Every structure is written in C-alpha cells, then in structure tokens.
Image 1 (cartoon, rainbow, N blue to C red):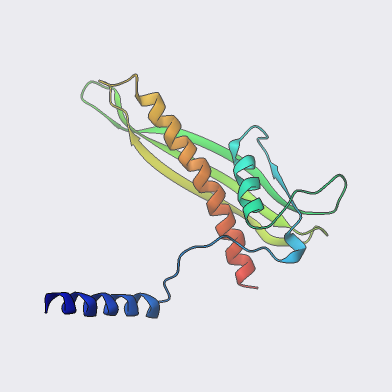
Image 2 (image 1 turned 180 degrees about the vertical axis):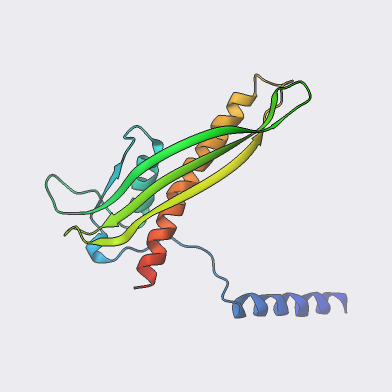
Length: 166
C-alpha cells in the first residue's frame, strides 16, 4: 500500500510541474540574421569575451570571416569592483562583496538595435577569514570566475528574452 501511495504522489507532483509551465533551460536559438555575430568587449583582456563567444557558438552562431557583415554584441562597460561589507572586533575585514557591472547592446548587421543598450549587475559576497588569510585570495578568484561565467549567461538570457518577445 505504501508503494502505491508513493507512485500516486509522484504522479501528482509531475502533473503539477507540467501544469505550471516548468521546463529546463536550453541553449538559445538565434534567428538566421544573427548567426554571424561579433563580440566587442571594452576590456579586450576580460574572460567575458571568450565566455560569450563560446556560449554563442553553442547557440549556432559563428564569428565573421574577414570583412563579412555581422551583428555586433557590444559590451561598452565591463567592471568588477570589491568593497568590505563587515569588519570584526579587531578592525579587520571579515566579509567582502564583489559586483560585476556590464553595459551591453546588440545591433544587427545593418546597425539597427536588436537589444537596446542596458545595464546588468551581478553581486556576490564572500567571507574573509583572517585566520586562513593564505587561502582567501583563492576564494576571491573563484568568486570572480563564477561572476564572469554568470554574466555571460545573464547577457544571453537578456538577448533570448528580447528575441522570444518578437
């Protein structure tokens, strides 16, 4: 009897999930006019450009060859900043916050805006343990790398939302 009740509850849970519109996030599908796209990032040494190019390639886009006309994903501002959030009794910082700010715009091959210029901000906090100060810079690098990956995905979700609304 217990097994039968479990199966009924699982079937009800699946029915509720499908009824609410839940679906797994999939790769973005670009329209044909945006399959040739160039990524321009203000800081050319930022990992954001590489992350965006890889994510766009997974979506079916490719970089332009030579002087080939292409859509352009412009990242005009690309900044990571860090500031202390809390200070302990000894006057040392115990917690930091890191913010990643980007201004982006997507234009088609003719220069017409597809996604208007907009700002995106992501923020993470992390602990700074004064006892383990040697391991803390590594934690900051992990947080920075996560922010860079998450920012590429946030940009693509914005593009996908605009393209889906067309």
